[in-house]
Figure (tube, rainbow, N blue to C red):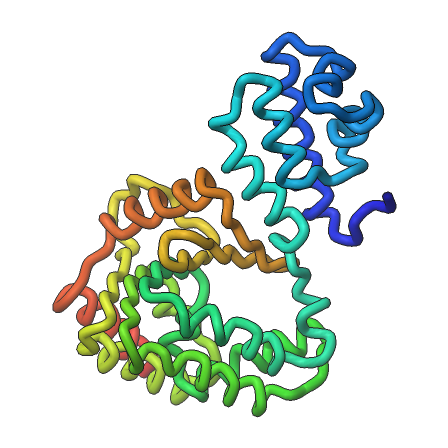
Amino acid sequence: MSPHPSSSVQQARETLAARLRELRLDAGLTKRELAARCSWHESKSGRIENARTPPSDQDIRAWCEACGALDQAPDLIAANRQSAEMYVEWRRLQRTGLRRLQESGASLYQRTRQFSVYCSDVIPGFLQTPGYAAALLKSIATFRGTPDDVTEAVEARIRRNSVIHEGDHRFAIVLEESVLRHQIGDGETMAAQLGHLLSVMALPSVSLGVIPFATERTIWPMATFTIFDGERVHADSLDAAATHVQPSTVELYARAFDRLSAGAVRGAAARSLITAALDALD
């Protein structure tokens, strides 16, 4: 089987293969003995351990049962399923423009009830004004060299993010104070965005916290991520959009969110930080 075009996907597959190999070694089994217990050829064990053949869910269950580690099967199956889709390269999503990228998450947003959002770089999409979104997406399109469909992309983003005003959705959002200070667009655009933050704090569906610069950290600033209903995590980086569904990984992000949230201020204290950022624009 030829290597997957995404090196990140291949790395995920290799990590899964290494974990399966460790289970076999911990059980004291040779590849031949494991193959006999699983009723397949010895070469299949080798291909799986060398990440040349992605195992099926059934293969993983059989492998774990043969090693006396059936309790580890759910995590390994989740890791296996995500390896084919966890890293969706931005250039692949964006090659036909940014509009489709905005539209691609609409159904997930609609069915999610609890969003837990941590942002260390920009205002989260849920809370962006059209002007701020246009400035941000324009910079992304220019950097990536993708088709210039920013106007359509902004419209799609605003439609997608209407969930903040609709239905039974709840948003726990934590921002680093630096997010308030990074100027996206001109001063007028940024002022409108910060003013919008102040107004959206009044929404009953939104809990907005800000981690002040001066806070003594119990956990370090990290890359932006969103948790959907405690079951799925999107963590963005420069080269990829990572999707995590493995229970232990989702739990790790949830624990990080709780720690980050504990360091945030809310209410009047958060409004004071936003107002200070507004004043600094003058």
